[in-house]
Length: 486
View 1: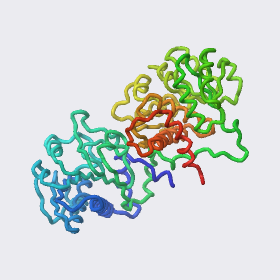
View 2: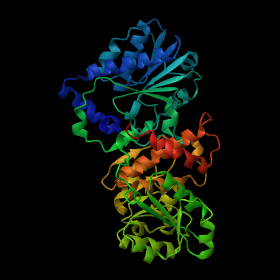
View 3: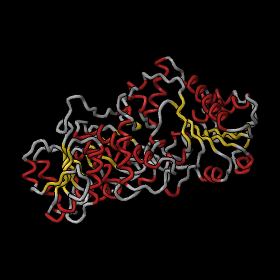
View 4: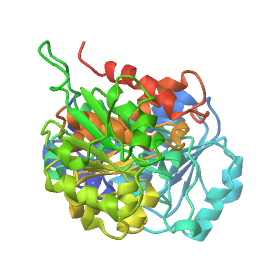
């Protein structure tokens, strides 16, 4: 599958696509007709005929709503339109509005309360300011299911945040129908939750418009990367060696990371013990896991130890930063997690040159400052500043490369919200790096596979059921095998 099929477009980029479509033989009027048809078809597939109230704004999103209203009425549904502003005379939205012959009613809480289904075709992704108070008040009231055209009104299409913050409002949609490509708000929280079910409908937009846009953001998934494949001549050294320094007395994080690295396909995985007592404890673990007691300098003499994971269980202090500096000076590819990130609080330059950084929101804020509403921009800036692929971990993980590429991951159950999950992810990243994947692709693949393993470990249980990281470990092999050729 073409990677461009998974491009994620900002509202500004989607506007560029709309503007370029006529140059490739597809008029805006034809796109609007196709969009309205897609909305009407999605509604008819999911709902029984009922009284429909279409809320139509003054722009092209409202034009899509007028088309959907007319097509639903032609199918025998009782439909009324409530206008919020009139389309600009002479525009395609005005033409669509002129073809509506059905009832036009006030946009009021009373009318919304009478509806069995509400279609939000007010603004879509084009809104840049909070909803006006009377409109927000009216939208708070309906108990009927709401279908959003492109996006629920009041969401920032570029960030997934509600415009106006805590003082703003966007309605909860049961269904969102969008077109051509997703926007960031379809994947980022809270927008993803407010969208409900998302239908991505083709509307005949020429694919050639993407050449002008050159998208740099993508919906994470297997189309973005290919996993390493073992050949007949492969052996443990061709599969890479992951080395993980462990903290004294805090071995659980390093052991989870090592377990993930082994199951992620690394040919060898070593834990480095800081002292004899810790070494004895580590040797009680899995028999295939190696434990080294030599100092870091001695281990660095082995050039085959090219991939290091620094952080799980390490203390946040100067010794950890010194370890990080030594690994980077030696030219090793380093995944920085946990203690290494906390040790770099307020010192992002200490992380410069790492292959991959894996901060959660708190660690990110300590190193780089609070990401703010535009998390994509913040992660891009962090990746550029440190010249490191950066994963902002969460229910909607954002993976950014120093060159500006971004992947948004929504393939992760709430069950992963448990201590140890990040250690498993870091181990997976290191394993894929050790096997030769490029840092951005390795990070994207590890984040997706981590979520896939969690879904597999859950089986038929709810996505938010308790799930130990150890259970995720045992599902990694199956998640990887399902993505390999044949």
